[in-house]
Image 1: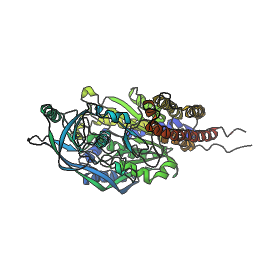
Image 2 (image 1 turned 90 degrees about the vertical axis):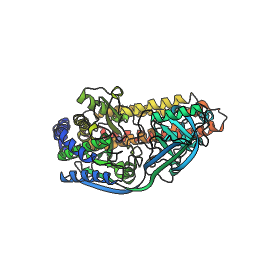
Image 3 (image 1 turned 135 degrees about the vertical axis):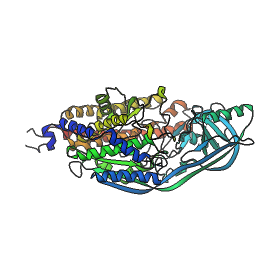
Image 4 (image 1 turned 60 degrees about the horizontal axis):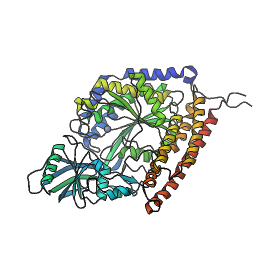
Length: 599
Ligand SMILES: [Zn+2]
């Protein structure tokens, strides 16, 4: 019997690939270095800590510029739990030594706290952390017994450690009983950073992990001075730290360019609007690129097969991704039902940038490589995303893409990053145009390709590699064969899907492709459940299986081994169920791809 004919968009009946190319060419032609410079100047003139008048002025500029071009933009306001560093003072008791010092977002506070100074060496000398369920952080057992590599007892001490302030060392030193931390920057500079391990505004689940230790940062030379004093004998230091932590109103500007129908799937494209100081390359320049991309894609919206939602995230720094997390929380259903990718932009347009790269989930790695190679001739190997850059959409289950263009270390690297020196003059507008054009390539493919350029096979193959790596880490103590068998079955389905997809134009199947990936992202990137994005630290892929290493290192009769074993039985169940869900979705996708026009 005759079944329903394929319903193809009008574009696909003529020249589908030509439409995608036409879109990319038209958008590139609409964006000039001069236009990018005008927007960058308007944004970067303001200092933009999140929730500040400067950030709000930048948001207002973006909104009015886009509305003047006819683009529909909404602004949402919400309360974020955010932390602005105010001041830090480090003094050696009994001397006049008081070097330049700053504190970090989400540091604890202290008022003239005096304690003995203990040198813990570098970050590499500290024990690591492991995460059980994502709610509680515990020191890895054997490392805890080792303590700090140089044998120092940090109980009751203010600890000097060489390295940039991060959340893991702060949590570790709190667990070991330190009362304060002085980070010695490995360079002669001070970088603003964030030390909480929570992600977005904290909830009842994780608010206990907000740091309470006061944290200061000093330059390398000041750290060396302190080390010199320690070599002579005991040193007492006095630490005063002020932070402004609490509920702050933040605003998110969101532009929505609809697809061919109001309920069409859409790509989410975001970058952070807040910045440290004037934030030239981090990231006023990226914000300007976003304005131009939004304006130009809106102008050529008749060529889109899918919608585009563009968001300028607040709270990236002082709220530890509070804006993107709020958006994921509050638009969860819309993102789950119609979102097909998250494209992040951060730090493009850097003066002297020479190396291209990308951070992507494996499903978007081929697209990123193709776009960079087509436009620049460079060959890149996209890396998997770390736990940063407003990647708040793993629970929703969106593939991710970010293209990078970085400075080489032999040219001094990105030395002004997160410092007052990240000023307007650090932006090169020809480089920014190149970088913006790369985003035009990636977004045009996602918005107008006849078949969504999301590679299921790459993602499933990568899953197989990661399962194998995790299994190896248990050194034969734990069997993941059931998961590996299912991964192999899913890979076969993905390959069959790829064959059937080749040359097909089926935007109606976009969401079905993402539904196949979603259960995988929820195990590949999340240690617990999809609704609570914690923790804000890198645990590696398949983080639920991180305790595999405990089986390789602990006595099988110990409580710790058996607790880890119990955890892993449950995590194996979670993994297998996720792959089974992906298999079920892949089978539906395959059935939908079967030719329907034949008798
Ligand atoms: Zn940034």
